[in-house]
Length: 188
Image 1 (cartoon, rainbow, N blue to C red):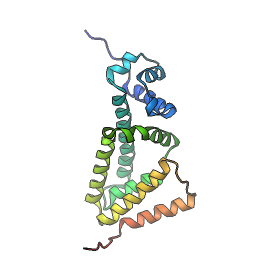
Image 2: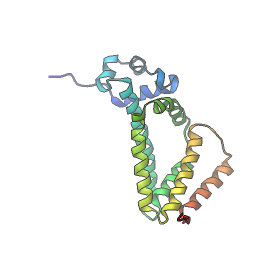
Image 3: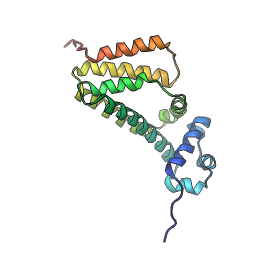
Image 4: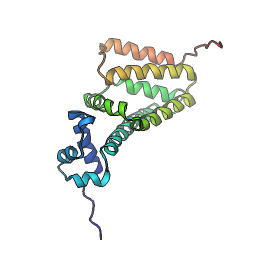
């Protein structure tokens, strides 16, 4: 009979995230994660055969966590018209936690260097955009609102600009206004 697994995968991913945040993705090693988690390297290797696999798992988990926040907001808003874009804007309005910012910044180098690490993020964005288009009363306006909200979120994630509370509130209001707009496109 095989040994019962006692190492929690989430504990390994928590340790990997702490190492990435502290040292950066480029310096992450399986040894460093094992030390951070207080387990053997073999225990890390049991679930994640390579550094690349471990970083991909951290990214996938971050995408799932962000989707969980969105789904909770979506449930709170309900199934009315524009529900998907309203939930997206509401999650952006909440801002970015310092821990999330630190992880995003630390993972950037890995994302830039390894195209396949971006795949879970690409898939998530495709699903977000499809859902917004499906549920929007004005798909073009909703898409513009999504792009504006994502721009605001990106500035937050990378700590590139800090808005005052009033400025941020006005920006969110303007983004919400975009949702119902129906921009005319030039056929040329």
